[in-house]
Amino acid sequence: MAGPPVFLSARDVGSFAYLTVKDRLPQILTKAIDTLHRHKSEFFEKHGEKGLEAEKKAISLLSKLRNELQTDKPIVPLVEKFVDTDLWNQYLEYQQSLLNESNGKPRWFLSPWLFVECYMYRRIHEAIIQSPPIDDFDIFKELKDQNFFESQESIIALCTHLQELMKTIEDLDENQLKNEFFKVLQISLWGNKCDLSLSGGKTISQKTNLINSLEDLKPFILVNDMEHLWSLLSNCKKKREKASITRVDIVLDNSGFELVTDLVLADLLLSSKLATEIHFYGKMIPWFVSDTTLHDFNWIIKQLKHSNHKWVSKCGVDWENHIKMGRWVYLDHMFWTLPHEFSAMPQVAPDLYATLQKAHLILFKGDLNYRKLTGDRRWEFTIPFHEALNGFHPAPVCSIRTLKAEVQVGLQPGQGEQLTASVPNWLTIGKYGIFQFDGPL
Ligand SMILES: O=P(O)(O)OC[C@H]1O[C@](O)(CO)[C@@H](O)[C@@H]1O
Ligand SMILES: [Mn+2]
Image (cartoon, rainbow, N blue to C red):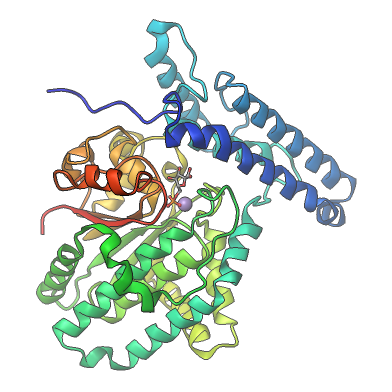
């Protein structure tokens, strides 16, 4: 049997991977440098001269990184001790071993895109932790917060919708509940349009009320396994004994508006009793500009709680309560910010794999998670999702993702080709979405 296809890479001139490495990543680095500049006086106020020195150091490390990238220098090992440093350096050696025959070195425009893109964010983190006392500075924080503030209207609409629904949720019949479940699923899908790395760090917020647009957006859902999710969870609910649990795990993606949509989904899962417990997984370090860290998670819930709007604030209060009561659990693990595809999880992070195996369903939000699920390879569009997962089957999984990278599997014969003919950049513009499920029902 033939092995999996090759990784996407910037070596393919003109590909989306190439354009990302050539244009988008340097742009993100430039923005990061600019952010440090703009916080100069804040660092001074907080730490005095030492803060200024640290700012200079972090800037020079990031400028060096940008230069390495733009001149396609070899990827160098990480130097600063951190929990995942050894794993990163081992992975670099592994990438090196793949090139040994050709005597080459892993490089930005040669190595797998997934690897070099993750590596850039890990090096940004290294630059920060090498620059105490500003070593806990989240360089992307203000962008994430801005996205949240600019999406206020949509957030109000969403929280109001949820709280109105709560009033009658006990009285809904099966069909009505399914309908509501599908609505919040779609809201969470389209919430994934709002990531900030695709836009090179320019803010994209949700300004319109998504709930009113769901019908218009339906034709853009290319794979729609929502029915599978419903069957699985409604069966769990029917068969569940009094004391037993149904756990849904959500592997989070972006903070800001998208996170609110995910929390709305998580709340509906609990209040409809489709699930009894939710585990969230976020990132241990700032990642791909807008990804959620523990700090973002807590910050957003606090912001909602203190909102002047009664339904928004009610959401914040309820969600804090879910956390207090242990119905919602936030977990982070360094695996999510390693460069490995998910099929490597049993070897690299067996503890995390074992944790995921206890879930009844795992929802993977966003594009980067999809790239890691499928190994970020040049799969044919019609290859079954199950096959592209390459042995990663901890529990039933579902990817909820808008398309922002040139990888898509599990399409109908001809579907990909038709899309290419009508919308040449359909894979990368975030306009199309999927609910792609794999697992026994
Ligand atoms: O936040 P998401 O949905 O994972 O999207 C991030 C995506 O944006 C990009 O960073 C654009 O380069 C993709 O590499 C990545 O897959
Ligand atoms: Mn993201």
